[in-house]
Image (cartoon, rainbow, N blue to C red; front, side):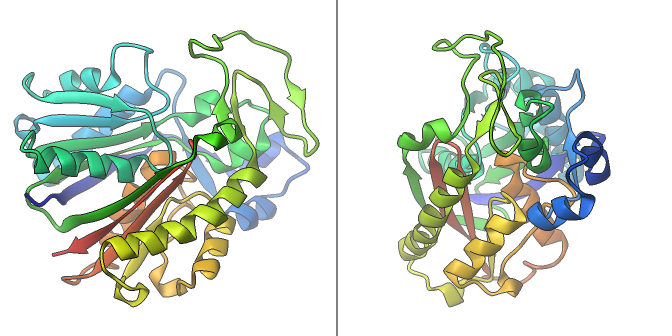
Length: 335
């Protein structure tokens, strides 16, 4: 049985962290430098008492209102997050209850970052193909801001909080085609929150200032930017090539490329390396930042709103990549 994206909505927290506010904490930077380097002018930050389940519910409610979806039609909830409300119970169970989704629906969390939306599409397609579910609510929700040290200017510049809700069903506006997925856990140390799990419980330690002025704390998000950049430049061109091959397509067959919105510098470097023309490469991060697993559904939603994908039989490549290391690509065929 075929699987389709039927609807997408998203939620952004109210707090706007503009570049002007950000550079007030880091006077050695300028508004222009931040905007030019990462292509982000503001990012949304979850409130002190706002957590993943809260944002996930708001994204789900927005979806149901915008598309007149009855929660009783949902028979599975997939929730992608790396910042769940609790170690247990599963955040998806909390979301199921708050959204009024029936108790005979399945619900599960999966822990994945910037490739999470593509993996979620793969899981949803498998549930439909296996006859397990017909209407899957895929929610991506992240509050990385709660794990970023206030003096870590690099990560504070890039990441924003958000949640997106996508309905995958047996009918819709874009058929989900074949996938290319990959993993290399040898890069796990390069994007990590070391403390807080069973191996390294939360235990505040002295922060260490590194050469470029960023802050490293085992209780906070650490990103080795140069290693992540090198991984991306190696993995993503191969991912695009393999995804095209899986779907028996050539570059010219693709109407739009929607990548994980990491930062503008990295994306433009990738675009040029792969040989994608600017008119086929979609960017949407200026007003939201890098929202981790939600960047692709947010960008896809905006591309549809802008009529960038208005015609039938247009094909889109989605490519997610990052923490893990993990990567995933697929093709959407608009119908």
